[in-house]
Image: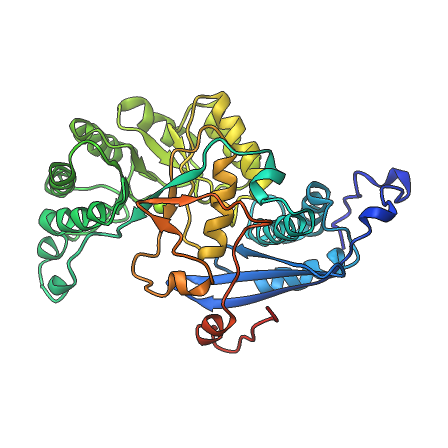
Length: 407
Ligand code: MG
């Protein structure tokens, strides 16, 4: 079932196995937790008395895990790089190196790293090559900044008012964050969405929002705004240029995906840094954007991009083009702490997203202390990912029809 692609490494007839590393994977399981997104948690069991946990991006992870399981059971979990290659070959007919298949590969790889760390007594960051920093800066995703009390207002200008954005920004900075992001693609008028154009008034409304936020928090905090691929090059360019006085750290996804030239045109036209990449997969997905100098910042998602090791390759390539990484992250504490380990190991990671401000039980999912303190997450020093899940909390939050694996 490997899509006709042969193993690249079995010319030795399997002699890579030696007795002292004779550990075998015995099972791979997946469970979906209902968070603010469906969170796919994975468990890789071994015959060595330890298991690993990981997280795959929201989507049909369980189907892919079912498909991958026969190719993983009996394999050695320490063969980290080889197993990623093996899994990628197995799913070559299901989206392979580009589609959702890599999200499942990413989740399994994280679980393999967790169990390999537990079995060797090493934290995952150490398995990945060692760290550049002891904690990772977290940026808070703040959605559209709307005040809930205003949600019944008829006029979207009142819901998405510059003051509502500024108030949320103040609250987030007061919570200790030094980096934050808002959605800026809010609709205040019946725009012609087919044309991807905005009126001058709509552009000015967005400029007013950004001005209000910057005036509220000052120039110190890192600040980004997301446009969710909504606009054409002239509109995106006009907006990006008008936002230059506010020194944004990035303007995210201004134009439709899969158009390298459009990204390059926008980024060449403005000194507002242009960011994209949450849906790009593996080094191959980022390569044209980097070689064409189409982006100023990239945002791989570690539960989707091919795994923590693949993220390091992507970040390394970006570093060669002097491009920083600000990873996308909508995951549970499992995917978040996995991302922290990986982010600590690359020089050019300047912040990691956190998208769960509204989930007040986020930290209850694990048995340790609150992960985010003063807008940062400390890199764990305990073996593996350094996180233990609370089965009772997970059981209360299972998606319909799901059954929790043993923890
Ligand atoms: Mg985004």
